[in-house]
Length: 278
Length: 275
Picture: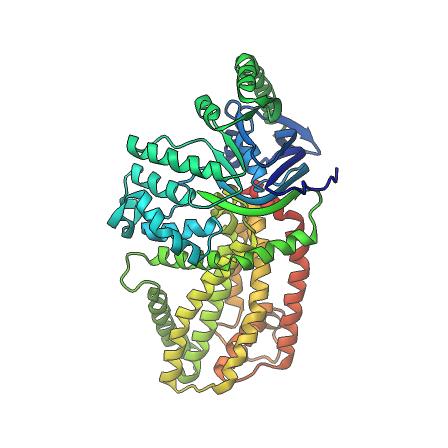
């Protein structure tokens, strides 16, 4: 399909029949294990042309425009993270198309890119650059970020001296300092004291309110209800339901246990077959 | 970690336009890869008082000791042998370290690659920048040596710059190709590492071709690394390599580009799946 992009103002995100296959390279048992663990229990195992691959997303079509707040729900390995990463342009689809217009920010595992030997300020600079900010832009934002983290003189020290809560504050402050039109988020922070949690909540709320489009993946239904107006339910990398949050949660809740069971059986069978071939 | 990107399309057949856009985006985000390169250097030498100048001292000691042994072994006057060895060694380290490190490039950047959409050439630029910084530190040893032995290459020395540019074109594409191959085939780095060790011994770095005592020697004639060393080392020694050397290295650079670019275009989007 070669439909033109939505020409109206504002950001848009369009997934056209998107399929994502993860290749599994035999011989390297270590990478196989890793791949299986990260893709989890929901994927299908395909065979063909001597190569084994796991189908992490299957023919997913979605269209989001300004004002959409979409929650992704589904159990571990259903394809939520893969879908987010495909939307973010990290994974290019095996077949199908992804079209995104507007500034995109991803907040996945936001403590991952930190350099523990560098100081707080150095980390602010590097993380800010990853967010697409210029040195000057970061310099402008540094005071505001520093104030939010409430870390004071600690920002001049290597962050390996920080506590878990301090790390979270720093990483969160930087990750939420950009001004994206599309915001893609995975899960939610759990660490940090109550006071920080409340301030983080406010900051996130502002960020989300400013963003034209939000896509949030979470296991926490309260969070989905809080931030999202619509939701999709993913199972085995397929869209099982899409619609208003309550309806989708209900649909997913009813079918979850049965589907999980079927998924596990299917994966076990696939794995046995793979072992035989390998 | 958080990241950002602006407007993109994925899926469909990989196009030349996308491949060029990758390089263009990486150049636009030079602040990021230069910051990453400096951070790599700082990380390596953090906690040491001299910082990256450890590289310089390391190099100085190495060259000093090797000159003592090999200069005597080859019966070459020290005033000629020491700068030859210094330049050969630092140019070799620059090229070989860039290539060796390229085999870890995408695998080690995996967490960045999977978190946000970044041009993958950004990491190759980071690799080149990092190794250029190390080269600059090692270059201090050459300056000291040149002053001590009274080597005055004059303006000729500036002709090392085009030689370095030709070399960097090669290193960019070899780095890209090897980074991809290493991400896909995990035994690839070992193959490259052992190959590089062999190349060190058959390339005129410790010894000069003239010392072989024969007019032509196939190992030298058919060793492309020799020509790359000469277009960098020669001008800094104060003598220009034959014009043919520039032509040949430019042709090799072109050939490597023509081989690597289609691979880059085709598999650029697959790297995230491999790391």
